[in-house]
Image 1 (tube, one colour):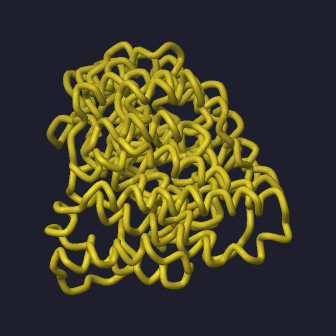
Image 2: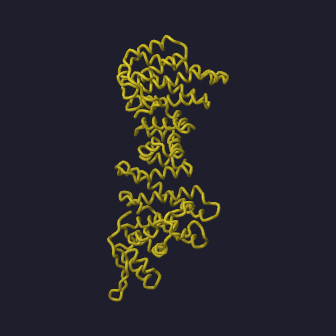
Amino acid sequence: MAAPSEESDCAGFSFGPVEAALAALEADEEPGRRLERLREIMELLREQQHRETASERIFRSIQHILVTASREVELACQDDSRRAHLEPQLQLIAECFRCLRNACVQCPGNQGMIRNLNLIGTTVRLMDLFQKLDIVQESHWTAFRCSLQFLGNISAGNEASQQAVWRDAFPDLFLYCLCHPDEKVVAYASMILFTCLSTERLRDLQTQNLGVALRVIEAYRKQPESEWAFLIILDYLLKSPELVKSMYTKLSHPERVTLLDLMIAKLLGDEPLTREDLTAFLSHAELVASNFQEKCKSVLKLASAGHDNDEEALATIRLLHVLCEMTANCELLGPLQAFPGLLETVVEILQLTHLAGKQTPNVFTATACMRGDGDVSNPAMGFKSHLVRLIGNLCYKNTKNQDKVYELDGIPLILDNCSMDDNNPFLNQWAVYAIRNLTEQNKRNQELIAKMEDHGLADTAVLKKMGLEVEKRDGKLTLRSTKKGPSCE
């Protein structure tokens, strides 16, 4: 895919003006007039007919200008007093890269000629000098952006060029650009990385430099509208369980939230998960479940004053959200239903948060404001809803887990969470769903709820809302469903 162009389209030219502009460029050493000739060539190379008839001589001339200008930049890196005189050279460099960028658009022949002249290596070396120059100047940033656009265009649809860019630019150029203060630099570097990545090169991110993958997450967190970083994560990083596992231990808590949000985006995407995706997510499920088990009690800190922005707790809440979406996928549900200790952990943390909310007013205390949108400032917003939903999913058509919830006294707990709670949207509906899954073809659980109703421990109105009713048959209490059977959600 071609990089965006910073100039407007112009009318077409014949081949004659290209030759004339090139001849004038080679004959004139004055920077201002050379800049004008380069602009003429750049505009001409916008047209497909001129791109396809471009000669190697054009690119050799541009290479000569870049090498000469590189020497000036190198001297400026060594002597600060020379930086004030770099403006003409920076403008020439930017225009050279605009010419190269335009020449590569949908033109494999030019991509090959330019690559064979080692202009990729020349560009990367010049960009390394730009990093050392380290000045905040618009012409400097413009030249840097244009160089990235050129690398993006020469790589587009061209495996040989992608190999050359990867060889010369990985990892240093990506490490520098992905955390650059200029958003365009970050976007163009992300475009190049996405273009060059493949299954084989993905391994380099793990075995040679994990930092590049970490910088992608950081870049997306800072610029969530970045399409290229988004695609890198969804189309490549999430396909490598080993890479995700290595990354997760290195990420900050806010960056973990970003990665987990993108897992959710992948699970909820319009396109169904491929077999490759499902294989990867089976491994991600182990990572998410084990981390939730380890960190779930950190959420209790949110009940204390001064801990409402605890980053570890917020990351743990997102782990729970991912588990809910994973267990809503029937391909991922089975392994999570069998994951050692997961159901026990979820029931326990529901008990603890429910108790915490009753002891003193805090983020876990039920509020029936009936606003429908909840308290957006509540960091635990929806946490109990997700817990009840996850219990329901883990018990879906699973007798062993249904019985386990019975043994953990989880059924009365879920029934006690059937009240309206503005800080837990749809809590009542998820409780209905969980009870239906807990009682489906499970006589003991049905009898427990029937006895609770008979002793006044279960609200008849609540049971009716659940689509359940208690009947006496031959002197025995039975719980009867008035609705169709449940499904995983």
